[in-house]
Length: 165
Image (cartoon, rainbow, N blue to C red):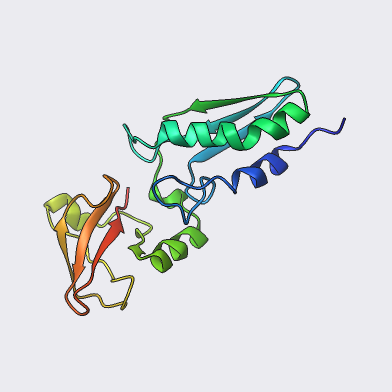
């Protein structure tokens, strides 16, 4: 029996959606850190987007469900392990993920932290709908803790901004 390579397992993981942002998969999110197949199992190492992320159990379950049948065909088990170091960063989002977020109506994070947030100022965020920069933060927390809630002053539409971590 020919066993799948790590690359083939990675490709299967690309069909596991993020439960909070279903337009992205767990690979695009940068949550999957390592895939290690061996003679008895395939080990998937994942990192939470932030400490206490409530979606991690669902992500682990979804990975188990997606890989269970292919693994059983090869006589393997599937193990998912949470790793906390290095800590996840929005820099791990793929470029394609950034565009998908914007197309979905969520303003993507920048590649580096906006230093103004350290001084209590809201970062400048472009509206994902009309692309205007005239926006204001309504709440530091949006639909999930990893997003802030904004309003566009140009088109008056509310939107989430994925925080730069």
